[in-house]
Image (cartoon, rainbow, N blue to C red; front, side, top):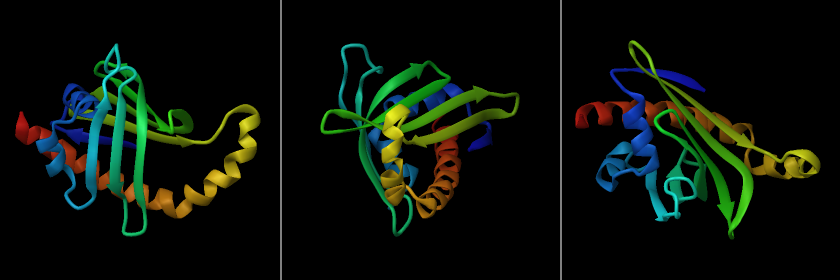
Amino acid sequence: MTSEFSGANAAAFFEFMINPPPETYARWLPGEHHEFHIVKHSKAPPIGDLIFFDQHISKKHRLTFYAVTIIADKTNHVLYQMRKFGINLPGYLDLQFQDTTEGLLLTETIRIGFNGIGKIFDPILRLFFNKSFFIAMNGHHKREWENLAEILREDN
């Protein structure tokens, strides 16, 4: 999903997603966003930082997971990989930020599934990450990114 936000900029979005200030995060989507913080800093932060996410994306869907930051290309790209029990899972949140003459172009991609032989397990993943989940996620993302753009404009 790609969205454009006037008056926003890549640096502010990148910095927020790498290390969100708790007071700003609390204003992001109250009642939907519960937690998003660094659980453990790596030796080369932000690459390798362990992040915790907890949010409702709809009344029926809650997304709670740990992730490790595997790409942090200042100020353009953040890639998180889901992790459970210390094992990297085949789930990715990929955020790309690009400044434009009008503001910010944000491209967000969620990838869930295995490569190679592991693809045989993908039907099991689709039981949880189904069409209903992605419809709810798209609606949530429209609300959250618009709101974050407004919050970051107010704070600057």
